[in-house]
Length: 408
Image (cartoon, rainbow, N blue to C red; front, side, top):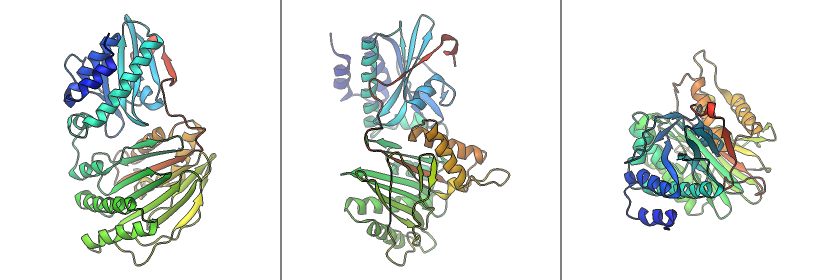
């Protein structure tokens, strides 16, 4: 018997992106499944959208917050439910720790451990193929769009690293809103040789001019970071790039941070930006006051580098003022206190960092009645000793669902 995983891997080398859902479904049937459907999350991470394919059953868009598929996505676990004459598995679709979506496997009967393990392996390979195919095809980007995207947002999404990255020592996750109209806010990160570098940036203005400025700033940041420069010198290169290309009325605020993953030592530069927050053991811990330098593009000297030390389990939060200054219809700001309380409550509930950020961005939008007046972005880093964190694996927990709940 031909190994379906090896067969899929061989087929993938000459496989067009739009054929992937049908080919994966064929290989799932060879394993013993009745049907298999791939779903991707939309850009707002509020819905799951099925990828169409020849011979693949049609499916409706599902809410991440109120469906069985959404439960698998939120909790990063396999959800099982009974169907008429069979069983259904919802499996998280993961690229490392980044949640791409979910996979629905419809089975003839209750799966044994071997079939479930085979399906998990198939889903893991499928996630890798989706990420690879997305580099040269627009198929998946089109499916993920629930509405029209502005040119500025198009530029910003192309600048971003994966929304989530994780190792046994550090987890980094970020969010941007409004997803389809984001202009001047962005973030970046890198984890290299035991060092985690972070950037959160807010370009002045809105729309395309702000996106272009952010693009120059991120390009200068990556160039300086990859040249192994220290934080003040990274800030200087970014400042010079912005000042050299834009007028004095155009600038960006930013926090540029660097964490020693082994020791927990955190260093950062504040260029006219909201201060970082540290959330520890159910409390908000304010780092030492860091004298802010002027915004990037307007600096007049070498910025100050500030230092603190994280403790295992700490969550470091970098954000733009679009988070805290989101204003409700009656004029109430979201505020730093509400931001900290939300993240602390999520940690207490056991929510992982990626799900915390997803729900936070939903809450910020709700606070401003889904009409953000300013871009809002956030990056959260969770630092661990390496003993506590466990990346979901082939033995991820299962969630059983009673047949009467299966229609949800």
